[in-house]
Length: 217
Image (cartoon, rainbow, N blue to C red; front, side):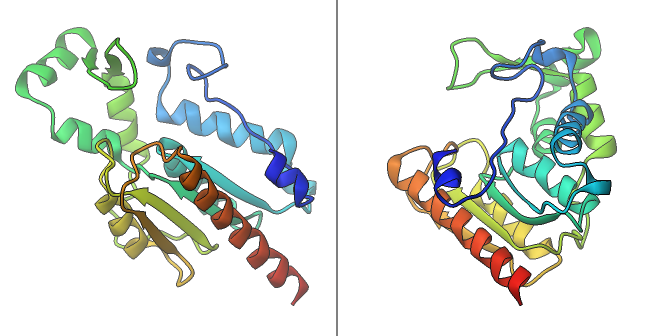
């Protein structure tokens, strides 16, 4: 926020329902719900039909996945996407790598818990979450992803949650020549060290400058 203020750029952030400071339990929601959260937030703050504002989206992991879908749907308003450890279709991958016991668990109870290093309690993945993602939000199965705004992807090569190869495959599918991928050799999934934050902010500055130059040309 301070970084944007110093550059005279507006800043807005939020947590999806069931995450962070927002209400609700994560098991109540699906990717469709979280996409709607993001879309509603943009529409509330920057109504597409009467706003001249242009937006740069910044999203980490699932947030980058949702950000790309927003960019597809709002091409005239979104002028840049910064994706940190982008995780498109990670729920498809989770299902494909699941064991027969886990798949039986989804059938029997509708939810399977997976261990996570970020919390002592395992993380619940519901069957409705998996099914919704597979049915409605796939990106990587396409040969071409129609996002034409500048995109900056950052990914740690020590990311144990989402391989950097996911971002490498993603950048090949994006529909423009301005998409770049920066690999952080010792970076993990969260890219939260001071040097990671500096790289993120530099990438954001790059997108801001690109937009300003384009607007002035």
